[in-house]
Length: 459
Ligand SMILES: [Zn+2]
Image (cartoon, rainbow, N blue to C red; front, side, top):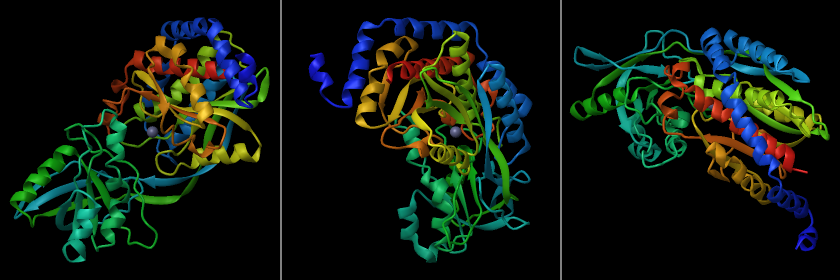
């Protein structure tokens, strides 16, 4: 049987590696050791606490983002990386300005709404923007209303995330077009501003920000998100008073691009130092909370994964890298820069793994790769089962590692339980208190085990 397999070209190397697994229980034992080490001697929670409370939110171009670069660089040096370096990257510099305000106005009555400007939006006029409001669920409805009904008004997008999806990321994906493209779609019909229902399944009064984009050559109008409770209230009021007006005020602005950095730390490979396995997250975060789940957790887990392997005395075969990507939230400049540099230097990347879905209990990995690599990734499942991993399947990996995509690389995204992620995502509630120490550490252990297996089993 083996001779037959060997004749099947490139496949043979992997197949042999797979066969090797069947008879090698060392890998099972090493994954056990990773778990044991991780749960008894760890640094994730302390480091994430520092990042969240001593440094705070880390919007691209902010002083905190620069402090986070220093902090993670120093930690990479402390854990004994053979090489730690920065990559210069110019990032957008959007600032929120004063706290936003919004009111529903009926006759002489005004009712406040919880509101936040969307990232990269323009400001309202200095004295605020007041106009009649019109509610829609989607762009089709908006277009059906036409210029006549939309001109001069504020468009209110109120399609909730669909609760039917077990993966809340699927629900997010089904609604986020309203946030991203809503302003330009409305402006094409003459609208003067937009409000969008916050991208969360939770019914509370916290507005969730997030990036939006303007279409070229379309009037830039101010765009903001209101809390789900405010959206429900506005919806009810509109039924009773279809002509009510809303006033809102925001003073955000986009300044000149600013110099920032990706941070990279590596352990040099002993067999193939010229081949790389990357593990990473994004260091920047929105400014409302502390960027605890998004994505302080993923950054800390990535460095912690390397630290665990190092503290077990592991000698990697390939070069292992932790990468702190800058500017995922409003530009992806860090992810693009990293891939650009890798190409320029001819660095061969075998695999890249991103953690950017919160510090919750890990459940699996979503894989972007060719069929052979997908099969290989799936074959690792038995080793990861003791960590509670049950799902290794095809799916989107991570925004920052996306630019590394090619015909051969294995891209993977850590998939934790997603039920609570959007309670906190881009809101002021994304704070260290929302992170469970054990769940966070399990994510780090899972990433360590995954890169260990890739390092061992890819020839
Ligand atoms: Zn993120």
